[in-house]
Image (cartoon, rainbow, N blue to C red):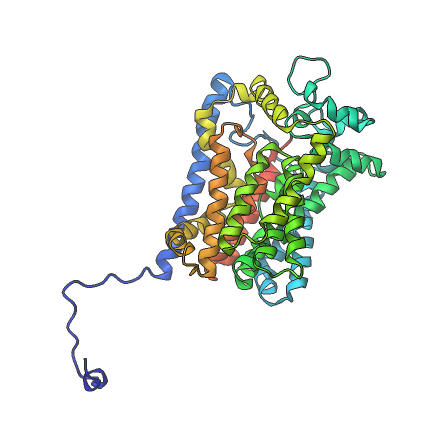
Length: 473
């Protein structure tokens, strides 16, 4: 076309023989987001219906309100007004504040907001029932504090008490985790912070910091704008219901900071990258001694190095990661032996009766409730961006949104491995928090239109679960 033809307003342009389809409109994208959320709701509904049939038939699911490990218990509590106030504040002001606040102020505000959300949800069940009692029940860590008066002897004999049968076998959660988890609460007790209240607040305060760690990692690996968009959704994450009722929120925070520190080291946005990589390794090593399944966090660390296109932090990372294994091994605890005994213990209990064929997909329904329907919609957008993200990995031409998509897809793959292993049948709304916290940032891919609606949906899920069910362990 000549310059004259381009400038002639009267010229008629013939349509091409094979018209190129128009790009999907924003309206169509929003419809697909809603369809994805509806599909998530349908998955939950089917898991509930099928679960009820199985549980009423033979009781093999070992849960009272499938797919969640919970009981029907409609109630209000002292945390109800506070939880509603936090939800309204984040929905009403969160997106605007996240966009405008200074970065450090945003991190502190997100930590405070996350802790307030977790704490207020826990207090719906009251102080004693919701916080103080949670880690003192017959399955929990605080039941064995007195058996660690001699820590060396306890570690050397730890594997002798994992399998059911020998005298003095550990409670379920102690047997189901490496001793690093129990030693955390032994340490609190030795420091004068014994009892369920201190243990509960430890998990809540540290669990709330996981949101900050994710923001730090997102800023380093993608960009600050996407991190700011994800911030309100990280604060109002529905899995906060379980962060305040178990030690898994604490585990999630340790793992998240390991990933965040490596992101800072790999992108060289830390003042001392080698120290950040070393810190990441130290936390990853500790993570592996908090929960056996969290060795999968290593895949997220690999994803960070892949996105940053560097192996420079690998030396300090590995050096730091060796500290906990060496220390525990020298103290007499054999991680591999303990893990194999745990598998035996797992199938001695509920794991031996819960049907794999149901839980391999119902676990995903638990995850849907825990991450919320906004996250499901965001994951749809991440899946759409994933092919381009994979193609851009080798040349390093990823956009920030594609980097975010790659990170969330990596978290999904890790979660899939945990699911297919068969060692996560039920209770995944609690156990998978260290993985789910990396799915929530997919909400940053949602458009500005309707963001408050999606935030409302997140809050409603958490409030309904906490007010209608007793999520006891």
